[in-house]
Image 1: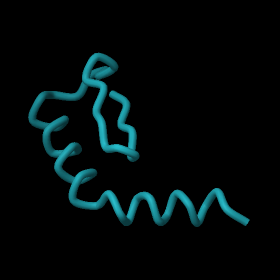
Image 2: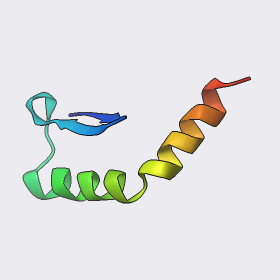
Image 3: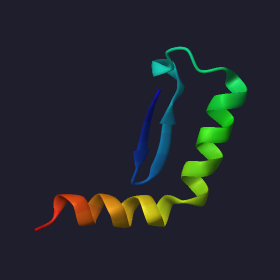
Length: 47
Protein backbone atom coordinates (compact mmCIF):
# COMPACT_ATOMS: atom_id res chain seq x y z
CA UNK A 1 0.00 0.00 0.00
CA UNK A 2 1.23 3.45 -0.84
CA UNK A 3 -0.22 6.72 0.43
CA UNK A 4 0.42 10.17 -1.02
CA UNK A 5 -0.13 13.19 1.19
CA UNK A 6 -0.68 15.93 -1.39
CA UNK A 7 -3.40 15.33 -2.32
CA UNK A 8 -4.21 12.44 -0.03
CA UNK A 9 -4.48 9.34 -2.21
CA UNK A 10 -4.27 5.62 -1.56
CA UNK A 11 -2.90 3.03 -3.98
CA UNK A 12 -4.71 -0.12 -2.89
CA UNK A 13 -3.08 -2.13 -5.66
CA UNK A 14 0.18 -2.00 -3.70
CA UNK A 15 -1.41 -3.52 -0.59
CA UNK A 16 0.80 -6.34 0.64
CA UNK A 17 -0.88 -8.17 3.48
CA UNK A 18 -3.14 -5.61 5.15
CA UNK A 19 -6.73 -6.67 5.70
CA UNK A 20 -9.40 -4.36 4.27
CA UNK A 21 -10.39 -3.23 7.77
CA UNK A 22 -6.75 -2.30 8.48
CA UNK A 23 -6.46 -0.38 5.21
CA UNK A 24 -9.63 1.54 6.07
CA UNK A 25 -8.33 2.40 9.54
CA UNK A 26 -4.97 3.55 8.16
CA UNK A 27 -6.77 5.65 5.57
CA UNK A 28 -8.95 7.32 8.20
CA UNK A 29 -5.91 8.07 10.37
CA UNK A 30 -4.03 9.62 7.45
CA UNK A 31 -6.99 11.78 6.44
CA UNK A 32 -7.59 12.88 10.03
CA UNK A 33 -3.91 13.74 10.55
CA UNK A 34 -2.96 15.03 7.11
CA UNK A 35 -1.80 18.43 8.35
CA UNK A 36 0.34 16.91 11.09
CA UNK A 37 1.97 14.46 8.67
CA UNK A 38 2.76 17.25 6.19
CA UNK A 39 4.16 19.48 8.93
CA UNK A 40 6.45 16.72 10.26
CA UNK A 41 7.49 15.73 6.73
CA UNK A 42 8.45 19.31 5.91
CA UNK A 43 10.24 19.74 9.24
CA UNK A 44 12.29 16.61 8.61
CA UNK A 45 13.30 17.44 5.05
CA UNK A 46 13.94 21.17 5.41
CA UNK A 47 17.06 22.77 6.78
